[in-house]
Image (tube, rainbow, N blue to C red; front, side):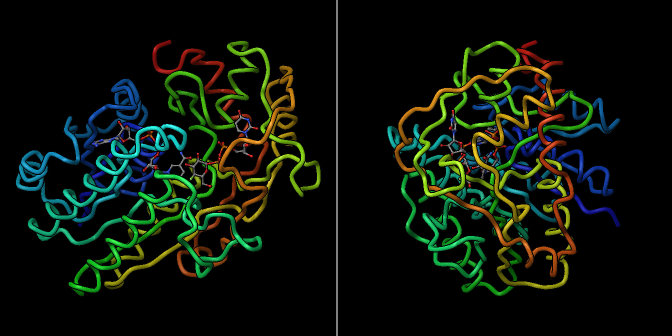
Length: 340
Ligand code: NAD
Ligand code: UFG
């Protein structure tokens, strides 16, 4: 029997890639999104690529009545909860907006799920919950809580809300997936990351430099205690990340409780290594200038992904070259994103 999955935020970057992998794995989908940070063109292309019709509900996760209608109309088995705001800097300027959207929105969603008897959820958490780790690689049992911004705190609080919910009702099946740094795009070059305005994240910024939309990359800090002085992160291909969600939902079928998995590759690359790798993949120059450290950044962060490998049978298989090539294909085929 095919399971029907509700994907909140399914029009966004990670959600759109997840739609394709869930469809390929034989799930039926319903997508809910308020389109505050995405374009319906993304969903249109997912439908085109997959050949599936995907019911779409344009609504906000804070709209309880809309959620109740959705759960009444579709027999949902599990929810993959991507919907949320994710810009770290903006969260410092507008904390109430982030707490309302992410925390209040998630609580409204969980209330509607509980009322509908849908008690399986996969939540998009982040390595940001670990703060500045005492050592790397980071395991799931490392301390959490030393978050440095409202965005990170919103993720941590939602994790805690879900923990309390599971403790209060043993029927809940919950996966907290802590993503490291998602990059890359679908092989077709038809969907990818399309940030509005100036990108905050490294990979979309680099690809806009390569395509000629921006003059050079600002490297935020070259005096970190890392091999070349620039920040080191665990970049993971978005398709590998999406596949981790499919594995997590399948694992939750085994029984109730809260499970936590890091989704990363286990290897870190520096900012300068990323710029070089992108030059190689694109054949375009990526000039850069060193600037001051960015507030709130840490020196290095990468995952120990062995728990997910052991328990889910999941492992990231796409390397840095593929991450850069796929990003470049998406960027060069769609120089202005979904507006091209
Ligand atoms: P995204 O902005 O591309 O996608 C999020 C989607 O959620 C968008 O389509 C947006 O319109 C929708 N949305 C936001 N608030 C909503 C609301 N109140 N109601 C309904 N829809 C709403 O971001 P993404 O990169 O795909 O991230 C997906 C999730 O993964 C987010 O929760 C994000 O915090 C988390 N995450 C992302 C990263 C990353 O670097 N991209 C890292 C760790 C965790
Ligand atoms: N960087 C630059 N120049 C830029 C952008 C980034 O040098 O223009 C550097 C940063 O200083 C950092 C690295 O590139 O060393 C990666 O920065 P990103 O902004 O791409 O990613 P972060 O690691 O800061 O954060 C991302 C998401 C968070 C998420 C976290 C999880 O933005 O939402 O990964 O690890 F929580």
